[in-house]
Image 1 (cartoon, one colour):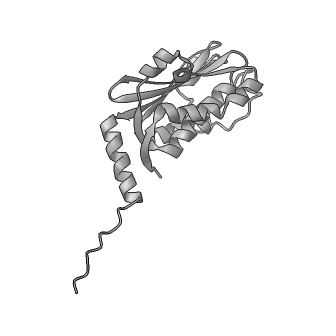
Image 2 (cartoon, rainbow, N blue to C red):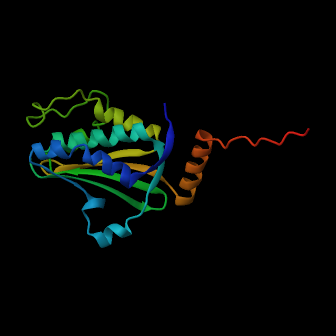
Length: 192
């Protein structure tokens, strides 16, 4: 099922990153969320970026990407960012300084049960379903998921979604509120 709602992407992803802070710290990794690690002056300039997607789908996808980045990074950092390259798109990126993905495996990564098999991945558990499900969920939300990676230097996973304007977002939020909280019926005075 796909149940889209307006999501303010920067705040939504911030909450998801917070869920992985302890796990990253336990591994000795630095987990950065770019919109909140910038200087105060730059942070004030950050745009409010809305998308109209299923919250549960987006949570599942971004959480899986962050979890994988932490899992496959032995040292260094994981950096999560939310940007808008233009007025039509919002891009969530998860970059790690992990083991990277060989070029010959990159085109197969999002296939069901596919796992990169090398000495660096054999000790790390998994079924090969996570990225396949992420791709399916992103496609259900009308978006796109891809990876850029260099073996031995890390990977960056990107989720691109359609951006909703501030005006469209406010109209959708108001419409949803009126459905959930209808105005009380007007009682006409009784004529005697």
